[in-house]
Length: 130
Image (cartoon, rainbow, N blue to C red; front, side):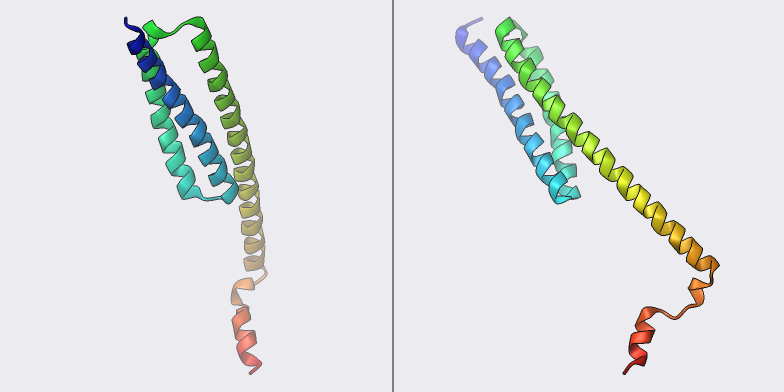
């Protein structure tokens, strides 16, 4: 296989790895901002790019050597570690939200048992002060 073809195949793999690294940053920004729409888009793109990277690696098999594979593996491992950290933080956030929602439901249930449903809303008290 000509050198230029090898370089092109390796460049395809490099492009996909760079795209995955960029998507890690996009996911991080979305997590920090709690922008769930941007998070969903970045995750969908991430799945697409991961598949494209697998295809590029397979296509580049004749052009790959041990050094290239080691370099790509190192970068892929770093991406994996970042994603694992993001998933752990997202799971922790999800658990915290779940606990808070259960607390709110418990308080509301308790209030209903005490007759909280028949109490005048707070807005009514404000209107009476006029």
